[in-house]
Image (cartoon, rainbow, N blue to C red; front, side):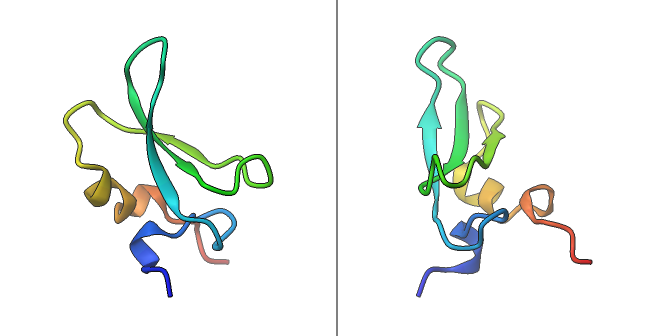
Amino acid sequence: MKSNASLCPRCRRGTLRRRVNRLTGDPYLMCENYPECSYVSNLDGDEDWEEAAESPRLRMPTA
């Protein structure tokens, strides 16, 4: 089972993957289920991606 920290907050099925923008070199997180899920979150350059995956700003609000 996948840990909750690495699950995509949009689709809740995919794992978040750390990627780097080829043009700017900026890191970001994206769902491995792209293009079915289009979740993307920019990271600060010095931000640890594992910590960012656990960040409340990436969690979907509960209704």
